[in-house]
Image (cartoon, helix red, strand yellow):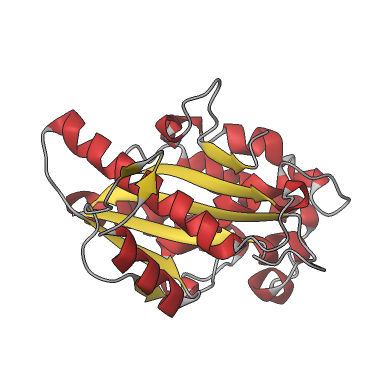
Length: 252
């Protein structure tokens, strides 16, 4: 089984939206590697507890670090320490060779059609590339594993209906690419209960923020921060030119 975790950053609105980007980030790993990977993540969280007081039950969320909310507010963490925690998380992530990650980034300001359903479009892009990637993984090592989608809380009904349809009909460049690598309906998890979803959240925010400049985000240097993930980025999701493991729409 291939476990495919997902979280987003930004919102899917086009009109009067407070954000310029809607990002979906996924982390993929084989289920037989889950226990060892989880143990490593838990040990990392114990290190954060030792060094900064962040409890294992605290949600390691990008907004909490950036805007000093949640645990960061409770612990009165300085901006310097919050920057260090974000960087430390990515340095740790880069060492977990059992996972792969990639993202979809919708550039909302560049979209001409105000009627485009951003949510559905972004999820279809992500699910299709998750399907391709799952098949690629299997082909590389001679496996035939199916995939399970595990997402943070979102529009569950819409994703369930979409995935059921795409397993039967999914036209890409005139071909029906059925997403038959997926089984079952999506599993929806509260992010505070899943370390894997929390890591998706950190990456998704970074993907959006590295395209921005503000007093709030500049101290984190998200462009260089994202480069730390190089060892775990799945670059095959974008085949035209240099790939960051990010599919932009509209393309840059």
